[in-house]
Length: 181
Image (cartoon, rainbow, N blue to C red; front, side, top):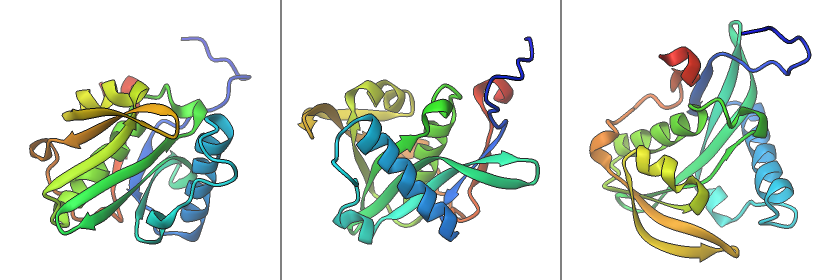
């Protein structure tokens, strides 16, 4: 591999955790706006809705040296009724999408932390182009639907593949595919 000083730096590790710091909440919201409003045009100015009032935001943070420095991925989870949890608004910064473990890490923590909080069923509406990733992560498609004019899969996680993670505020370190092997 040849070093090219003109290529943007990509961190070699990521912390996946619940958002706990004001900058994490702010930057997660900004990332969602970039992905869902600017890139995809699904929403006019902001993608926030009523679910944000009760949702728990999760973040993937690039990890440089000894400290986290940038929100590179986010998702939110919420309990719609006792035992029924939903994940939504999964977003990864464009230059980090090829890293390979950021979305999967967010999905893992989303389902596993909900499992620790009493989740009996975890659902999501997933854009069709992302359904193969979810299938690899032990999700099943319940139906194919259209949301915001785009094809989606109504999906359910197989909780047997997501052991409970009770310490989601600390989360875990995730390595890119090239370093995890």
